Length: 408
Image 1 (cartoon, one colour):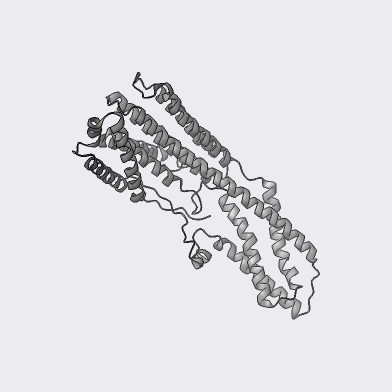
Image 2 (spheres, one colour):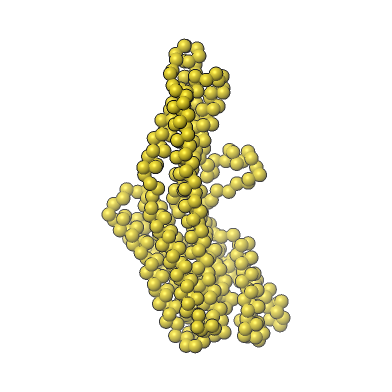
């Protein structure tokens, strides 16, 4: 498995594009719903709509830049990048590749094939290996290895879709809460929006931490203490989702919601989508690939790779030909097996795993921008500081329990 990656801040260009889209859409909404005068009051008091939007966007861009630069614990994981049009780079890139793991086996099997070829052709040592048996074993192995890779790939893409649903549900919850109460400038409404955003951020943070910590625990010896910790990590997002539901229901804003009939259904529906996606991710992360299939594929793979040079020596191949065929077949079958191993746990810290923290960070910035556009800079700064303080308290508590992964 690859090394633990270092962490840095998120790209600002993506944040700027999201800021521009959200702020322009929000200004149009305010202008249509509450009038041009109140829209200007929300936007920062400029004489024209164009100057208002540009001024607001610049302030928000500078605010996000300062937030990224001053973050107490910024995180961004290394992921595998490549240029599909550069064939040589794709073939020989080591980062995120199976070459480091597979190459020793390829060289060992190729050297074994060269020795056997020399013994068969120069020393007259003969080996009686059935070519039909070798072919049957290759067919069975191909089915097992390729089927496993396909199933794990489908499961990985399904997990990626559920992670997207998590982030999407968080954004939709905060945006819906903000737009339903955008006409309400009372202190109570602003506090309610802040609490919804704050609890949503903590919920997503805790969910990503639970998935990442479970991946770390899989590499450790399973003890009762670690099993209890793993169960508790998965239990915390469920409790936080319940508390978020209670915060949504006890808004105490009276009849000030827009579309009041369906307001609660819209808000709780976002939480329903989140909990459904989380439960599916928990089930995937806790379910291992069936061991009998792994055992059969691994056993047949190494037996076939061992007898492969014996069968090839009986064919009329030159030395370089048998070495090349042995090398490529070993790389192909063993490489697919390592690919399935790498993809079996997509929530870890390998370069081929999902970048959980960056996905969450994008969602956090969208939430900050939404609060900024509705309640202003002070409200957004207060929310950011509140999230940072909660992270600091969690890190202090982790010093007492060193097994728990560091939150961000």
